[in-house]
Amino acid sequence: MKTRSTTKTTVCFGEILWDMLPTGKKPGGAPMNVAYHLRKLGLHSYMISRVGYDASGKELRAFVQSIGLPVDYIQEDNLHKTSEVVASIKENHEVSYDIVYPAAWDFISWQPEYETLLLRADAFIFGSLGSRNSDSQEALFRMLEYTAYNVFDVNIREPYYSQELIAALLHRSHLVKVNIAELMMIAGWYDASCNTEQEAVDMLFNKFNIREVLITKGSNGATYYTASFRYDYPAYSIRVADTVGSGDSFLAAFLAMKLGEQPVEVTLDYAVAMGAFITAQSGACPAYSKFDLDRFIWKRKLGMEEKSI
Image (cartoon, helix red, strand yellow):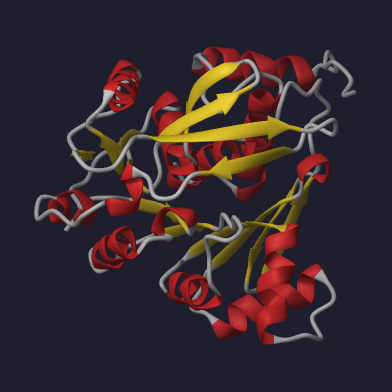
């Protein structure tokens, strides 16, 4: 049973790594990015992952500690190296990744002490990439036996996914965050006649035990669905630095507001603003305070935004 607390608790599972960007290396990995921003927004945030017993791993653990995240659930691996991913930024600001296999986070193992942590979590966040290997996949499905609100951040990366794995995770999810391309791909697996966003979302609700679908649309904003409700929100106009981690920050802000029981309009506005705020900076986890984010939103509400290029 979860204990009552005004501060919500979140647990993120999956990859933790170094993004090797043109501007230098930055801490990354979608679940770690989400955990980082949840902590920045004042939630109790925990990360379950694995790094190598090497200099890069020690540096990552030190970074995690420096931002106020516990390292108790970040395992160390004597056989496999800490993950490094080469991120290339294209002219349209889109990012491509060269993800090496295997890495330490492919071998996350179940630990008995996770049970207590997971039982008190208000949200459990995971992605598809973090379970590409059977070891971490087995650990993830064990963890899903103890969680009450499961958030699936679909993160399809060739060739590290299968229809069977995505379906198994969808069946265990309450909230699914997905981009348009991923949504239409998944819908096409089950119904080739799905040609629109609405048809694809309806298919997800009908086939899986999903309560909510959250769609990121880049410069077109985002859309939130339940089985009986749809809400669209436009994007903020900003000068793009890169798009690394923008979707992760969006999800973190959405969850922070949702768990705080804010109205969906306020929640989606804050999430879209956070995504824009991070997109205007370099890397997935830039240094900032909540005051910086609130000031960014305030300036744009007053029409003081920089135009995107």
